[in-house]
Length: 325
Image 1 (tube, rainbow, N blue to C red):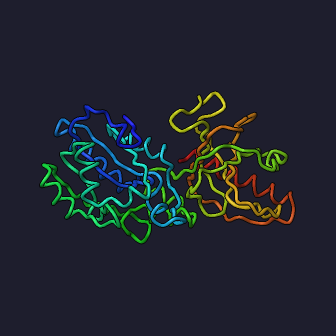
Image 2 (cartoon, rainbow, N blue to C red; image 1 turned 120 degrees about the vertical axis):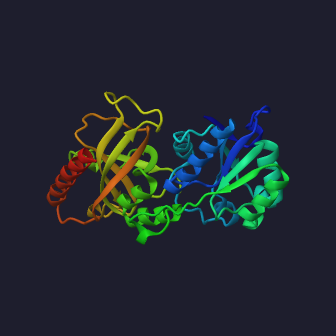
Image 3 (cartoon, rainbow, N blue to C red; image 1 turned 90 degrees about the vertical axis):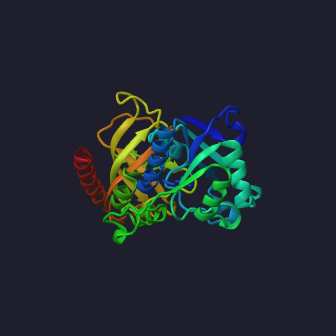
């Protein structure tokens, strides 16, 4: 899959394409539905498929300070899109100047002149251009004048979470924020994950026999609610994981999110203990932490012995759940 940042990186000889546009944060099952349709339509026409997305999130430019929690950073988002068989991902730098482009200017510059779109596939709530003035009706009108079709896909994927409301990034963020990582996984079609570099912490876990990877998460990450979780620790940047027999791979983990109130900490951290792994040295590595299920809330214990007893139980349950999952 080709990856471009900005229109200038699109090859000059790029032919016709089928395109979809959106933030696609999390690439959840609703997103997957529309991207799969793009790939299908492109293959039917003998052209290439392109997903257009933005960086940073448009809300941070239009309304500074309102950046939503990210379900997947841009590199991870591209990896998830690539897994769906897309030919190219175009990341458009979202600037103040870019945000002021009219729907007509955006359509001409991106879809007609740059990508030579023969078909655009979108959901019914798609908006584009300055102040989100463009909708699918305007998109279809512009398409007719440019020999570019428009297909609107019903994205009303529903499940058992969120009282059966349609799957969306907003629903997923709400589930993650509440600690319902199992529900978030239903929407995403896979476990929710956070990423970041392993940094040195207080090293209390190591002293107590449970050395943890203290993860400095990517800015704006959608970190689950405080508590203890079962899940996995993945060492190395996703997509280029270290061998299972080496320092990395996908390792069952007991994960702590919160301030460690037993030690009166105030900083909120994400720490993952790789179960039954000895001698790991992950400092400086980019890792991913995947959340399978919520085990319990964050507690303040009266003694280190009581904390150790609970940690042993957490690890036992996490081992059993990850082996089953």
